[in-house]
Image 1 (cartoon, rainbow, N blue to C red):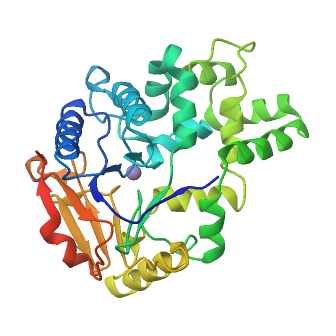
Image 2 (image 1 turned 90 degrees about the horizontal axis):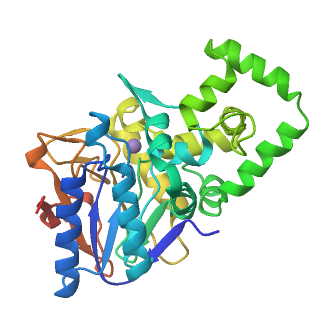
Image 3 (image 1 turned 180 degrees about the horizontal axis):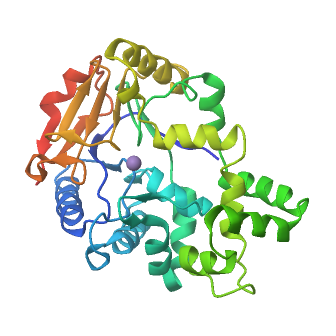
Length: 326
Ligand SMILES: [Mn+2]
């Protein structure tokens, strides 16, 4: 498994975090397709968190966006259409509940899947984690963190098979007393396991082949170091914990760890965190891009386009390449 897409040339059109909002998605997508036809863009990268609306269920177009991306990637290929994995997609690979405010993200999307489950979950399993470019600009969902900024962590993440982690979960499960685990899961959550599995994952009952998936997710989150690395890579908000000088060194180490031989990565572009306006420049090493959900106000939402072959040395060099939502 190779979780990095390496681009040596071509114009890279980049957006972040759409969180199930169809209209901005369609605007960015249509603009990309026009630019592609005109020879003014070659790669469409989405920095993860395509899914999970923060608003009402009826306004949540998460499934439509993924189905559209699946079709686009089938038509145009994985070098042209490059959605990356974000923390919101990750939880449907491992069946791990996650909420913010009043919204429980896992069950809403799981109940949406219906007959599309197989194709959608396969698609999530296939998503790359990073794009690296000859320009020295690396694209990913969240940002740098201490645990992931080592060559060993980078190597593990870049060759990760989710199936292998889930097989490890099953190995542990096969050596456990499942009934006892179900009972303790119920004790922790205050609800019967079966009720939770129905609510969270839309399973039909104990005969459903996915009946134990919620329990598998619970075991997965206790795997060390696997889950710690996944959690830090996809959920990190390290920039909020560290001062600018420390975070700058951390981004440098992170980029070094993820650089392929002969193609040093010098600038990081990520989404994941709200910004005031449409983007932030962090320690002149990182651009925090907000293409919709994390832009404040939304009218400042923006995308980035840059040449994968043209060397970039500092985050500020990319500022002229940032444009408002089309
Ligand atoms: Mn995120």
